[in-house]
Picture 1 (cartoon, rainbow, N blue to C red):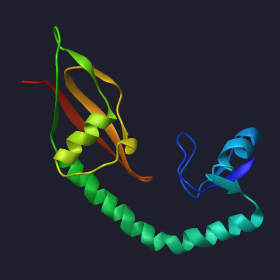
Picture 2 (tube, rainbow, N blue to C red; picture 1 turned 120 degrees about the vertical axis):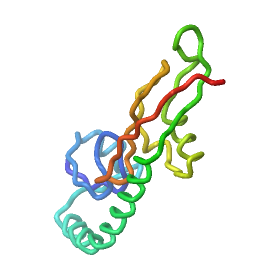
Picture 3 (cartoon, helix red, strand yellow; picture 1 turned 60 degrees about the horizontal axis):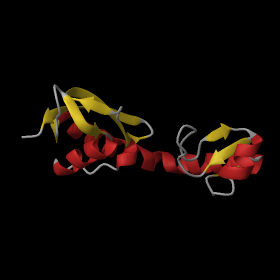
Picture 4 (tube, rainbow, N blue to C red; picture 1 turned 90 degrees about the horizontal axis):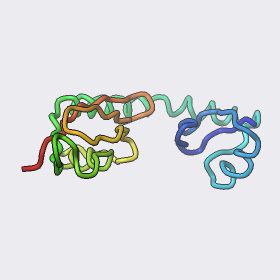
Length: 147
């Protein structure tokens, strides 16, 4: 079943993408929740026209996202966490902690756009931040012992 996405759907695609999914997933989840519509020929024509009109506006959004990406690369993020024996953490560091650290530095990024493997030890790690469908930045951060 071919569908046009109306919103970003994790592990499937971004808004206005044309995707092919199994019939049950489309009929029972994507269409009723308003995440997608059936990709008929007329819907595809309307989508093509909308994308053509939006191309100029999209360029400005991408330029803004690139500016934010440059600002993020310049940051040096250190996250303090409680440490047990050796370098093991009590708990873990995840995307929520990275989002809070970025907010303290003046860059408010929503936690759902940050991807971090679960961190359970001290050291340097990388987080992937998606600012736009075409702009993704790798942010290096360090987990340090809390004083």
